[in-house]
Image 1 (cartoon, rainbow, N blue to C red):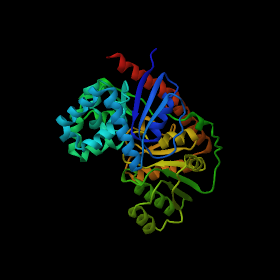
Image 2 (cartoon, one colour):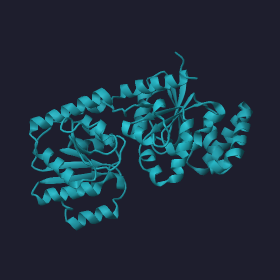
Image 3 (tube, helix red, strand yellow):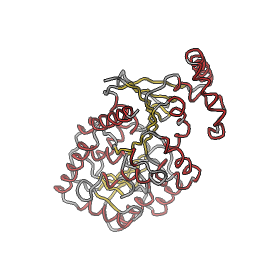
Image 4 (cartoon, one colour):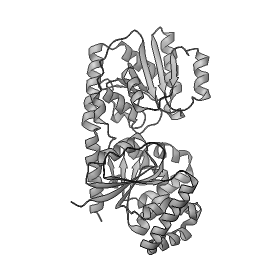
Length: 398
């Protein structure tokens, strides 16, 4: 079987947990994986199949890199350089970027054309569709997160771009049925799409957690300070439990500073002794906190499928999640976790009371069911093999 080339594009190296897990899952397949972008942190290549094309961060380095890439293209494939110039002239209004800046972004990819260009963020689709139009590179788009779930709802221009561009995409990968249904509002894409869930690092399943009853029930949430995370609901729920006499503690882990709204809410309710807002950068430290907590809360009002829920289930920490987005595809209520109605504080409080008062044997059964769900449907091996087959099917349609 031939070894083909796939570019996993997000623009930053390294990228999100989902994208890094995807790259790792594919690294053992018969693929050369190209990664383009600027470096935002340390990146350890797990396989020789992974080839990095890193754009320098400092100004002189970027100038040298750009001139080198232009020279390579002009000497090796001058016709391709001419095609880029011609394309820019006819599409400059839609590209909406200075010619030099656009070239700096696209030339490294044109110099190393992959068989498949796999775009991770829908908003960037308009910048890369030319790869298919000019060079016949297959375009695959992942349907993920805010780019699908709410950005086009308030951005009419973006919604119109999707209506126009989705017809030009060769195939779509969706992280959940819910997000596929949302994307299908802009173009009928279901005939050329596939649901493939995120991959969970199997090594994490080996981390042992012995569940033990503690006097204080410790809730935890992990995620950035953003309105869609719905922290106002989980904080309100903690306040209600404290007033009802429950001994609870709540930790929110994220990067950056909390919003004024969150700080005011905690101060106004006078529950600052029961809530900790902490910032942790290392993934291992976050896992340790999750393991040492009684229950993880996902209070989001919008998600595809939240990675932190998958991780908590694999780590052996019970989960309470809102029923937003694709979360009901992961959590079966009262079987492998608890679901509550999104934005409904009373529904969340009810689930939290249920979790606190649950008998140990039922909670342990819930934890085992959660781990089995992750092993069967969210393994790295499953992600790698399914995505590899998707790539092959797209190439075989040529």
